Image 1 (cartoon, each protein chain N blue to C red):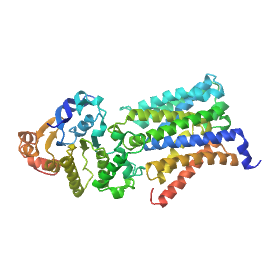
Image 2 (image 1 turned 90 degrees about the vertical axis):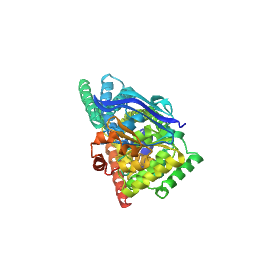
Image 3 (image 1 turned 135 degrees about the horizontal axis):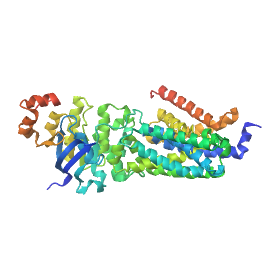
Image 4 (image 1 turned 120 degrees about the vertical axis):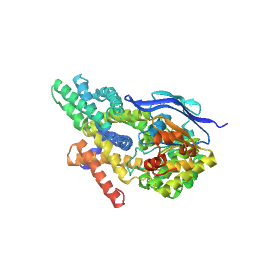
Length: 274
Length: 254
């Protein structure tokens, strides 16, 4: 079978379409998370998603419905993380660390109760493009429309909040609502990305393409577009390389995005910017 | 009669039972230039942040442009320059022009393109602040003085009636500091912009501000700088060698 014949397979087509959209989503949201210093929230959400998926699997939900059943749980967890990080008595990083650890701990306990780590749970932990369904692609496309619309319509508000939250508030921006929107959209993205790169690796996809773009971007719009390009390129090259080299897709995507970051950092340094 | 832009009545602020400010009352009218000084920990920044709704007050009332603070919505009337920004990343991907344009959000909202008039305002204020040539540079790549000019331009681009400045000259060299005060005075004199400026720079603010407030958890003095220098409050507060004390505590003397 030649390399190009793989594009004839349905699962590769679904993976490439969903992957392009996930790469775009992670980059668009990740740039605001990184600039807001909320990068760890992606990690916290991913770990909470692990617990949620383990619970859903324990409840006997069929494989086709795991993603949808986990969504409401992760959204609630996202609001909990945001509430904790905005608490004056607990530092943001500490709060995320607590939720991350709790998510993993619950996941381990629930996985044990359901008879140990089965194939299903491993697919969600490390990604498995074979289980991406047509409905997953449609849901990801719908989320991409929402996120792109939000960035187009409210991007300047998110940008202002990322620059300085107090200044944004005194410009009349509802910063609390902006944070809720950002974290909920990120939670949805994390759930939808878990089949592609896996729960353990999804936070890297939220961080690496935006950080690569920040090495080169000059101006807000160019940086966002660059981040989107890096996100999409990472995912597509990762999927294709994993197929060509017979490697796990999730890990290959993250390695691809890391290599892209290294190249961006070198180019940025060469141009006199670190 | 000048319009009252900001009114604070019997403000009390406390955190965890520790008193930050007690019984603060004052008004600021259009055209006022109010300088607020006080030692470290006297509650100056807390006062300005409370007036903007950034921290809660324990009791008392704040009114902005006649409206209670929780109901105030017209933020385009207010410009704010904080003591320090939360952004510490020198590679924050915003150019000087983008930061100045953010100042239009109060009047324009976050959606869409700026109008022709707003774009003209952005050009005018960048020119006035002398940062037009740096417009394409990243904000984090500017010197402290240029950054401050850019942030002041952001605060002024919406043509606010009230400008609140929290220790804006801390990071500036003496020459840039003088220049900064001259710009603020010009805005107050020519456009009638009311100014509230918090500083440790007692001498300069004494030269420029029309009203002088000495704060130390409560309002110790409210009057002109000349009155302050000869006031019983200053002598009783600083002791008999008050001029010398101000010199040591704030670097200058009356």
